Image (cartoon, rainbow, N blue to C red; front, side, top):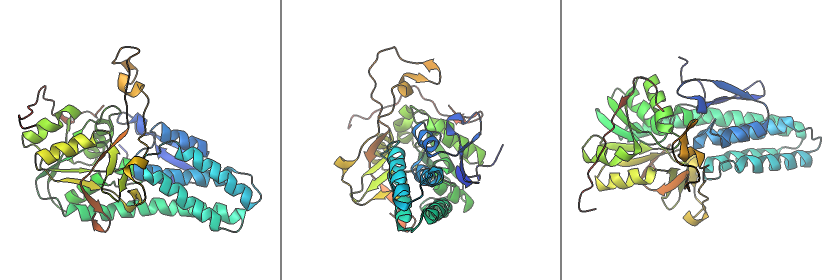
Length: 348
């Protein structure tokens, strides 16, 4: 099996290469894109996902757009890029990293004097953003690892690993760094319905890297905590507001609420590009995903035709935040914890 030290998204020979995450865990397949519209479709359909990864992917998309355009004048190329930016942004509006990546490229493009300078500068900037993402994640992981002890059992939700970034990961980067520091660590991963990022991606990553992992259904979060099977929690984020509100994969709020109920430390690991210091909670658009993600798994229907579906991709929660600066279906062989019932205490 190829190593996950390979980049999730990479610029090579004026094209963008991505791991197709919709094929995991069954197939590790790389796809090559040469058109920004292809990048937009890849973001929209979750070929690439995870806030840091789509931020860099958006930047790469604009770099491709700059090369695609046959514009001869600066204003003409800037207009082309603005249109491409709009198309790319509308794919997944909740993750602030996407807007950050697109805006950074547009700033560089507008500072350049000529069409040739624009094309050269946006490509180099996007490549630099990808390299910096890995460095930031490794620094974040090192800082975060100091919060974890030998023999900790850590729960995580969704996938905030190498596959959610250019490489190494945020929440899973903290877990990787903890293991690399010599501490023993075990992970409990939620399956993360309806798209199964926990079982398909997190369990795949951790098993691949030799990190002890058990998989639980989302409905077993409370059971796992109430029975003392976990003593810390770390998740990633798609947007963090100055107010402390954290937007992350649907289901994060219930994990955070249960953690509070059971006095379990709950941490959010994210790079500074995930922080939104201007918006208020009412400003944020919560992405609504297609109903078929809930009414079926793969080609198999699991719900009757015509049933109403509510399928938000994200929700709001809060917790301790780790930053670079400091505190700020599953592969074969995965251990599975699958209780049929749990107990809710009367005080709730």
